[in-house]
Amino acid sequence: MTSRTTVLLCDDSRALRMLTSRQLVECGFEVVGEADNGIKAVEQYQALKPDVVLLDLVMPERDGKQALRRILELDPAARVVILSSLGAQADIEECLRVGAKSYLQKPIDADDMVRVLRETVA
Image: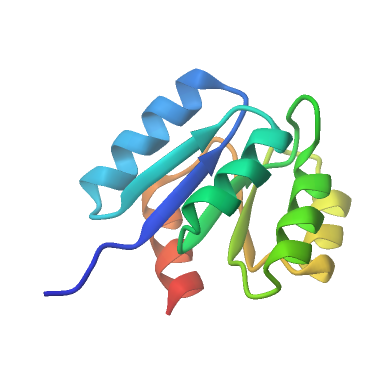
């Protein structure tokens, strides 16, 4: 039996976290934690060591770019997928240069999310 891929879901929108979490579980992933700001995202990453992190760019207290850099400082092998809204192309490119594995555009398409996550952990 293979274990399910564990996901840490980081977004300041509770509604998006609820919807995305449900989609992930329905597609066979295990959501091991959620964070609504960048500081909690880093704390949750350290505590849970998920297989992959879905990380929103725009969050309070520490944004996604700052959280990405800190997670990669703690674990250079971390697999982080950036969540972004339209118009954030420069930020996405910066995150990919820093070490994010991929990105997803909001609103998130469930099929795209599953494909990107499977590619990220392959």
